[in-house]
Image (cartoon, rainbow, N blue to C red; front, side):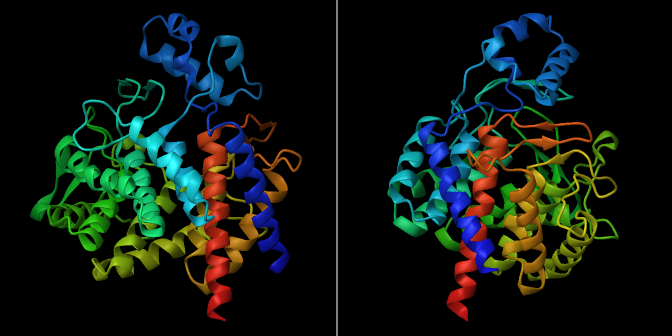
Length: 386
């Protein structure tokens, strides 16, 4: 165990240095529409944009330099690196990232919110570059509060407090009975996704419980209730309720449970404890092989996506002693199978036929560093308590 903790620390240091050397900028699996060639070749059609995005995302060869796509600063990546910087104790990096996030706020959004540095086409609509999302803003908001808690950085608190206006004013709501509702994914769509909903709610809950933003309390609890009501009998949640979105995958399950754990740790939703325990049991029992190999979906293995082990290590490191062995197995498997030992970067995906090794900054490196930083944090906490 000590050897694994030391290996995690060394891997985190190497990866953090690699990302710093590149100013935390890089490619993204979904940045195809940053290419003028791709935009022209898509002929202005939804399916053309989807086809090109999927081609670049699934290709084992990085075609982006040939298509005029340049590495960029993704706000979500910067937020994840901010969270890791705080946990690794790098105040200078953290405060620099806060300043960059302040400059990259989505224009015209109330308060503070963040999107992506590329336009993206989902199955419903084309979303312009910098369209703010509930998921991005929630992860970034939590990282900003972490930074303030650790270093008392005023700008971090200022930005985090401003996110409440984005969630409460800009996002749409799908109503349920008794006042419960689901937040939309972005202000522009009617896509209602469980992990996005409770991630947004968890940040509002933290703002209410710890920073006096009382207007956030009731909406946070109402949004949480919407998703709690839709937990399936086996403890799982569909990604979303539309028929075409009724899949159950690993890392989005982790995101939902991570949000629920925040509520419980805040003492704001004691009634959710049973749903949380049932969800954790489903997560632990259905998404991993015995050697720690992470499954993407509960009913099949491939593709093995770096998001799955990264979120699993992050979540189960803090899920209690009974899950520590699972976190160790997943981390060890990831270090042995999804990491380039020479450069320290993490691979994107493994399929049955090949591994995609393009070093995506947000999807692969930022999430992997977050997992390593959380594992190190929890390991240190356990040592102090012994």
